[in-house]
Image (tube, rainbow over all chains, first blue to last red; front, side, top):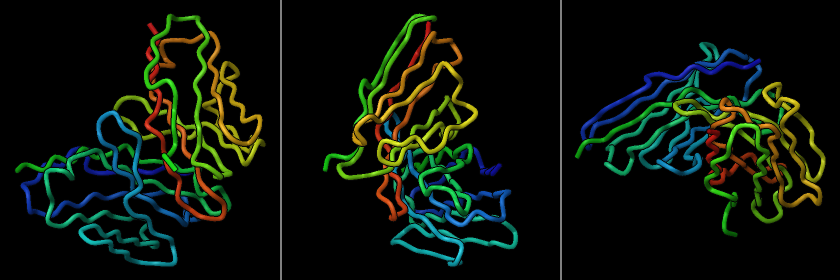
Amino acid sequence: GENVEQHPSTLSVQEGDSAVIKCTYSDSASNYFPWYKQELGKGPQLIIDIRSNVGEKKDQRIAVTLNKTAKHFSLHITETQPEDSAVYFCAARARGTSYGKLTFGQGTILTVHP
Amino acid sequence: DTGVSQDPRHKITKRGQNVTFRCDPISEHNRLYWYRQTLGQGPEFLTYFQNEAQLEKSRLLSNRFSAERPKGSFSTLEIQRTEQGDSAMYLCASSLVPNTEAFFGQGTRLTVV
């Protein structure tokens, strides 16, 4: 089955800096890659996603890049703010399975210091 | 549309007891998913429904676990003879085919003592 590895496990940045979180996946048939943000005591919230036919997608301060050859994808947050502090999860969905059946990475605890 | 709703938010139970959780998906969403999340880990897929049909179950879902979605709306997840290893956050998500996004609820945190 699919395996998703996520790094780093913790990331600490100063407000205004950029943050980058990287994930690798094992199943070359995977074709959908969402990123979720989870705040304490809450469920994961989708922040951005990308499909395998696209190399990059951007939404305001958040961008995701995908390298299918290397089987890795990354989340980039620019101009970080304290409210960006949370746990971020990458995920992958294998082609042919339901879009909601996801394999998640282990998570990255992002702390943005004011 | 108030999002995915889960009840209860927290549950403490003694080992060996049965527990049942409820999930109300976003109105008209035809797919409903259950995930389990242990501390410091990402969510792990357990099972999903399309309408009332349970289409897939993970090997994580032992025979002590059962999920239902009798009328294709809300769903229940029951754990029989709970064990300490069942302590986790149980998350529910829903989506509308053919759209891609899966929206998660707040989860039910289970503690088995």
